[in-house]
Structures are given as C-alpha cells and as structure tokens.
Image (tube, rainbow, N blue to C red; front, top):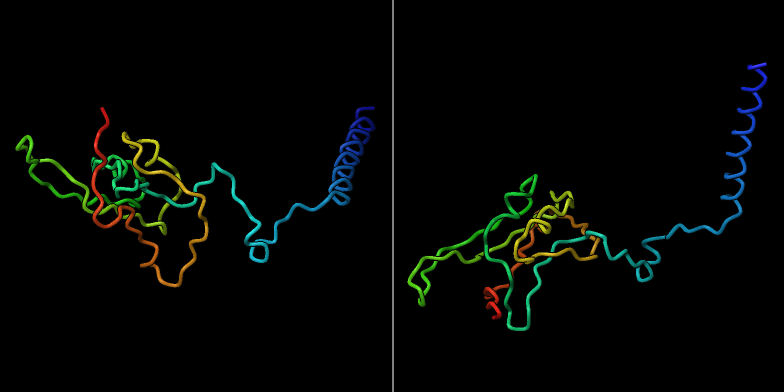
Length: 154
C-alpha cells in the first residue's frame, strides 16, 4: 500500500511541475535585450554600480581622510592618500585628503566602505557599464582636482 501511495505522490508532484512549466510557456517574456535596448534599461535604486564622492557647487566634499573605508575594504580596492598640513587657526597639524583612489576592477561591491564612513562622504551610483580594454582605466580618482573639505555647519 505504501508503494502505491509513493507513486501517486510522485505523479502529483510531477503534474505540479509540469503545470508551472506550462504557465511559464504561455506567459509574457520579461527578458531584457540589453545591448539593443540600452536606453530603456533602468537599474534599481539599490543597485551598487560605482562608488562616487559627491561634491557641492563650491567643489567641496565631506571626506576627512580618516581611512576607515580603506581599512574596512576586504581586498584593498580603496586607497586614501592624505597629506598633513598645519592649520593656521589652531597651529596644529591636521590630515587633509590628497587623493582618493578607487579600483573598480577589484571591487566586490560589498558596501562596507559606505556603511563604515562616519561622514557619509562616499555613496553608490547606478552606473554599471565598466568594460574597458585597459585595466589602468579602472582606477578612478573620486575627489576632484582642487577640492577641499566641506565647512561644518553650526
């Protein structure tokens, strides 16, 4: 009796699978033909495409060159190069961002850098086309030339 019960259950499961297969056969297709429909493909808002450092109109950013993002990056994708200058107001030595280098070729898009940044200086964009013929073009400098630290609002 158990043998017949197992055969009936097996046939029932097979029919369920075939029913789902037939439904998918007659449904409208949702495959996006990417290169042909390049202007019509819009990624989701939560997609991690490329790391950005937003600057305001005065060419100022929020990065304090603390290096926490560089320390938390599991494979060394981020390199924060800072220089020390003497602050005229206090006379103390302080660290200023010189270059913020991001190697998109080795990034695993884990977002540990953006989550750990205390000043929210970096964020993700939806730009996802990164194919190039030369690997050196995958290394981007995120801070703009001549940019400075944003003044604190009181």
